[in-house]
Length: 102
Image 1 (spheres, rainbow, N blue to C red):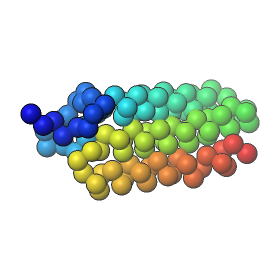
Image 2 (tube, helix red, strand yellow):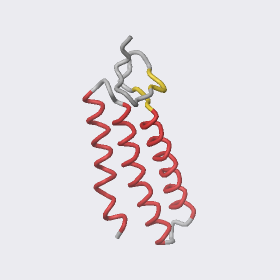
Image 3 (cartoon, rainbow, N blue to C red):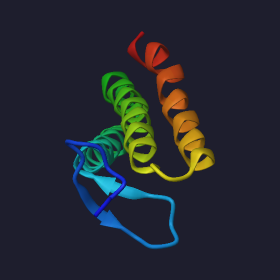
């Protein structure tokens, strides 16, 4: 009985007709990315005039986009065009990472 997964992959959620299959790796990246996005937005909203908080918020948002792109790309096992879209989100987060640090 073939599942389409290699050794070490565990399918947590797969919807028939959709292009995403949530593995444990993709789920962990998505959860961490979502928490970092919430933390970054909350940090920026709490004190919008505080330079360290806004910088931390931008850094966390950039890292969150990177992690969400990694998680989405890892879950898009069956459709190459969807995986490419997630890689573009990942690159968007990576592009702003150096400017958020300095």
